[in-house]
Amino acid sequence: MTSQTKLRLFCTGILILLSAQVSDCEQPLPSLSPTSSVSASDAALTRQIELITQLDQRLLTTVYFCLGTVVTIFALMIGYNWFANFRTYERDKETLHREMQNSLQASANKANEETMKKVSEIESRLLASTRSQVQTELQTLKKELSKLQLENLQGQVGVVDP
Image (cartoon, rainbow, N blue to C red; front, top):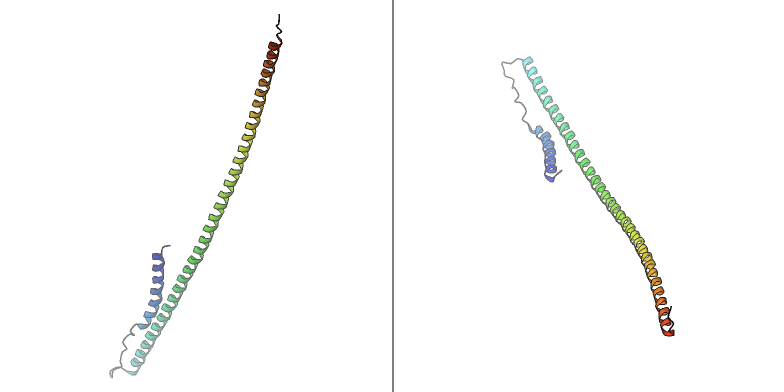
């Protein structure tokens, strides 16, 4: 709900409240003045009509005031409900934001641990493979060296094979 909509709701509530108060200011109906040609019973009936008119005006004023009060209370309740829901919405939004951040952080940490585990596993395999190849080459070189040493010794002794 935008601030403009909130302002409109507030102004509408104020106008409704004021309309109940304005009804008190209405002009009463003009009263009939008894004339000499009017008999006493006509004057009494005229007076009763005036009293009924005043009573109707007072009754309408009370009804307008009550309606204005009900509408004002209704508008206040809507405003409070909006305010309470807005606060709840903001709190829930913040909670979801924190939960998502924590979830993403946990996923990133888990992925990092798995990656480090895989890297160390690959390093150990590579190291083992390299060691076995180096040992094989070293044994081959030792055989070659011993062969060369044997040939060198045989060449120094002067023994010729028949």
